[in-house]
Image (cartoon, rainbow, N blue to C red; front, side, top):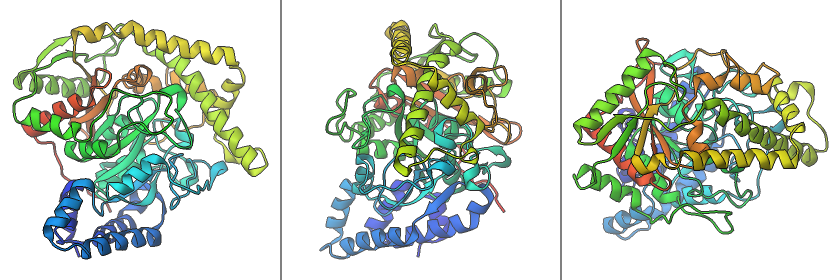
Amino acid sequence: MIAPDDYLRSDGLALGARVARRESTALDLLEAALALAARLNPSINALDTIAADRARERARRLDAELDDMPDDDARVELLRSRPFLGVPLPLKDLATACVDLPSSMGSAFFRFVEWDHDAVLVERYRDAGFVPFARSTSPELGVNPSTEASVYGGPTRNPWHLGHSARGSGGGAGGAVAAGIVPIGHASDGLGSIRIPASCCGLVGLKPTRGLMPAGPFAGEAWGGMATEHVVSRSVRDSAAALDASAGTDAGAPYAAPAWRTGDARRAIDAALGGDAPRLRVALLDATFEGDAVHPEVADAVRRVARALERLGHRVEAASPEVETIVLLRPALEIVACGTAMSVEARARAIGRAPREDELSPTIRGALEVARGVSGARYLQQLGVLHRISRHVAPFWDRFDVLLTPVLAEPPAVLGRFAMQDPDFLRYRTGPEGTGRYSPFTPLANVTGQPAMSVPAGRSSGGLPIGAQLVGRFGADATLLGLAAELEADAPWDTGRPTLP
């Protein structure tokens, strides 16, 4: 068995290496995750479906494969292709297909959707050595940046303060990783859903470039190309290795990011840490795009990151793309509403009935009402608006390599503040008390398709994590990972664990 302290202080790559060296087994790691889930999940409510028996079968097969290896050299060679050998992985409770793990999509109306084969991304995760074992909680249909879906019996709580949200829509992944149940968790990002929980839980969260991650075989794109998938993790190197293991378009993809070679992320980190990476031009934005002030503790945290980048030799100056959050959000939200309606209608056809009143939240019903008013022509018109925004801000990247902003305008919100009870979907997201004012920075990269990531930037006076966002040029995912690795090495982030009951 692996000692609890060894498990908790190791990232995914370290755990995979232990298994390859036979210091632990894949089954050891899974049992450690299951034991921690049994102890900690009742407090944070970050995991839903747990397929322990199927995961044990997968872990035993990996262990048997290692036992059959002729020597340690062969096991080390296997680790090259399976860097996360035996590492337990929760999959976000949305539409990422996994034969072992049905999904409720965070909704009573969808409980449970099952698949007869895996998504390409899940196949790649298995090939990398991961052991999918659970679903991590998500807000209903992924449309809320706070994970408070009633289908799970209560909200997902931030491990650093149980009265606050782990945010969303990858709140379950963020909570499970921050609590120490797993070192890395699958997530997805449509308007910030990887970066927001990473920020709130003190983790690393990269949203890859549009088209870099496989979406097949069940879909070509999500939300007009705004959504993609990756992970939240405790270390930059885990995020990089997971990207190297899973990136690359799949057959029939509607579009592709710039070509990705396996190892690009690792090479970028090695170059950055070895002093061989070029110094970058960084634009600092410590207010909203409109110039409104953010919470002073958030602004101070982002400025500290800016000073660290200057100390590392990068050139930092105050600058911002010319864009307004509301101008981004209105067309984006109509597209999200249409995607939500498509999912609900497909589910209704599959089970032969419409949702009952208690099976969808008021906000989801509001999204369906918005979608009813969006014609095919209107949908394409709004998609065109987003494309024009992308072209409008493109010249900014002739002057800068990276944009540094907050992830959120405030520290993590208290639970209940963004519960999905408002029947007016657009007001819920863009109104005076809406989520858009709380998270104005993340949607831009979804609209433009650029890579963006959250890195730990400090703590609030209440001890809650605060993240900083790095946005890069289209296709420059490896550059962001290298820059994050520099920050991580320059002033190692607080890797302590929250105290949970």
